Length: 69
Image 1 (spheres, rainbow, N blue to C red):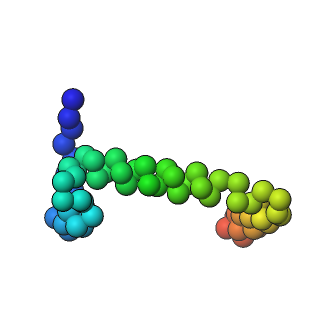
Image 2 (tube, rainbow, N blue to C red):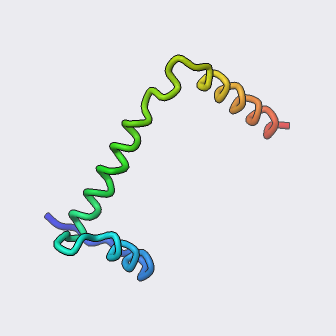
């Protein structure tokens, strides 16, 4: 079952430039989604063994406190 989605002309033009010559828009969108999924997975675990997660939590907590004032 297919679905239609509306996009602005500029968005369509950009997607058309990204699309391979023999690639459908559906294939393009599937490829872009998979590329993003792979990028997210490749970044997973980058903070292991560091205190970056703790520091980020502390900074977020401090920002929330500042907003509440």
